[in-house]
Image 1 (tube, rainbow, N blue to C red):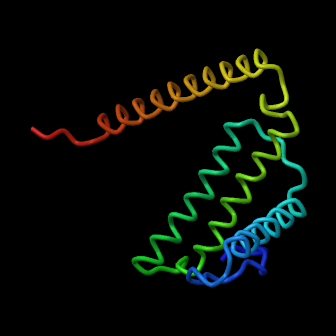
Image 2: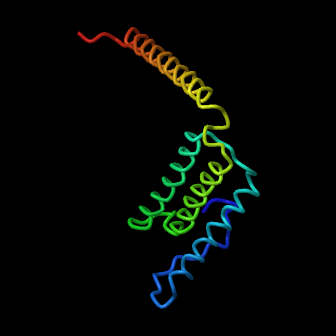
Image 3: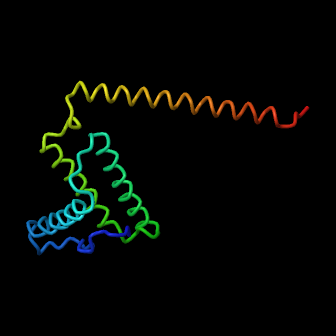
Length: 150
């Protein structure tokens, strides 16, 4: 379990058909709401661009997947399935809140957002080319230092 997580996330229980669906939805919504409050207290209002939001959401779904795998096959995160599911829902709720604030274009006009993306894409390509050159030069240096076999 991660440090500082909401301790009021209810334990995982089997579906109780005697309880009305409204009661179960209310419990789930309350767990997500409690996690959102905890996130807001820790991080404040978050206004990321959509790609960053997706990265955060994917990170959380990855933790949920890990907990599910640990639950199925054994592992230390096996007890965290409910907690991780609540965190996924809370991040998804944050994205909705962000969009409702009118911040869907990352807080800038669509053209500015496109230019920012193009710059970041160009930067990533340049960085990839530099890494490839470095790897290539390291391989060349290793081959010169290696004893020849023949």
